[in-house]
Image 1: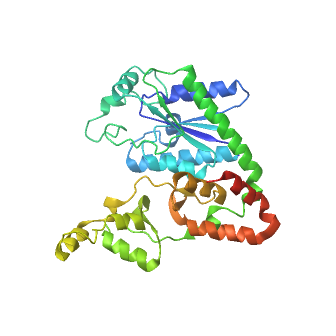
Image 2: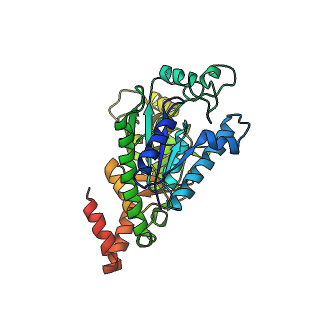
Image 3: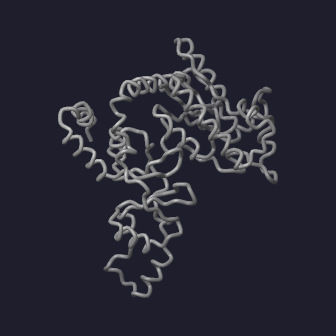
Length: 344
């Protein structure tokens, strides 16, 4: 088991230059790293690319699978790809236990100038020349670039590559390598306490256009406190019972019954949901999931498997796991000791 770092940013932000420099620095320490340059991969996967949304989705999912397969074989990976849709990078995070995102921040005008003077290589020439034209799909101009929600490292590359930047990414890689090594040693021990073994499967979901009153009644009937919001097959948000209560009119309001009903009839869960949803992979350990919930002070984690919502892990599920561990007796002591040392 090894690690993967996804270096993401607009075209021209310096991803390839940084990835190659980090790989060289780690290689000098006898840590060979595989750099997955998406532009080079495209030449094989899509020799005549259209850059359509459907084609990009297939190519990026293939990229994530390559990274996953390499890390499982013990090969460290640097992913050099814009990955303008957050869902692709979050899929990699869900599938690769030792994973991190490095976001490159660079003004668009600087990126344009760099692309204009870029040397011939795997990347298509004159990327920004086509932006703004009918049918163009340049990330950050014609299609939105969705920055990471919680990147492990943010780097300003407007001034070009620096030794400090290369070392910062290399240090991140070393920390991931340590985590991957610890994870490998614990695979057998934690195999029976994965999130998928304790989550509540097939969670109740609603689309964003669902009226908040309908969501409130649904949550009350089902006796649930967290309601994932999905658009098609994609998780786009989550609401809690607190979100619903805070957005209902106060009993002390001066509105008439008709005005209250009219107001509520127009309010949807999409307007009050939390869009930056923190999720967990189905194969992650209960211990790591609990640590995430403690860190972010949240009561539930939607569970993803291959980018698809398959369950939800709540505080109640964690209590069930804890009670089961306590009843297991001495055999559960190592896991309980780790949980205690993690602390709140």
